[in-house]
Image (cartoon, rainbow, N blue to C red; front, side, top):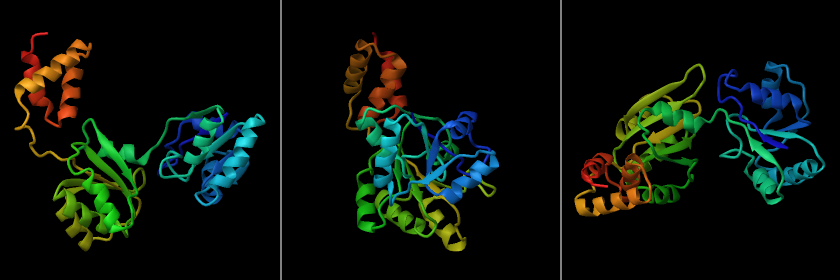
Length: 274
């Protein structure tokens, strides 16, 4: 069995009992950086074999790990922090396990972008994780442009020395939206800075930004409802209700499809006889 194990993103106590027991019991642990992971193992008195699997050798290591899984070994995979497989090594190995029809399981646990999205206070029901976007401004702008009308929030990972470039492109493409910058999540100097894009650019000019960053950008809340008639909305609501949607779920579904507020759909749905 292959175990995908999330590890603390800051405070070493942010780890589940199940992950600790798994790291103790597997035949060995594949980790991003042995020097980093050994500190976690020492903290919990875990003595186990470590092998290095990082972005530069993941293809090679995947082959040997797959062979070990075929031979009946139990193997854990960890990254330096958070959940392996998203913006960290692990995805290639998981794809190989799926392809080879080998058993694997993902253990629940810490994930920086989910924690930041909740802590931001501006994410409602829907957001898109953008991860680390391109270092090239042209490609960043193209990615932002494709999400310009998206009503959910956008969540980015970024480094302190590139955050200003990203914010400038966001301002140019998406406008002066409200944003939240989460830094050092689950660590001693954790903070959430809530400003507009232009205010954040001024803040960065006056303050040195350090640590690991997650940026949450408010979705497009512009009013785009005027071209959609109440009759069109009612028709879609009825279709959902006839498909055995609850009224609440019908409202949510139609709101997302049309890109309009749930309040407007709700008002119409409550007048619908069905």
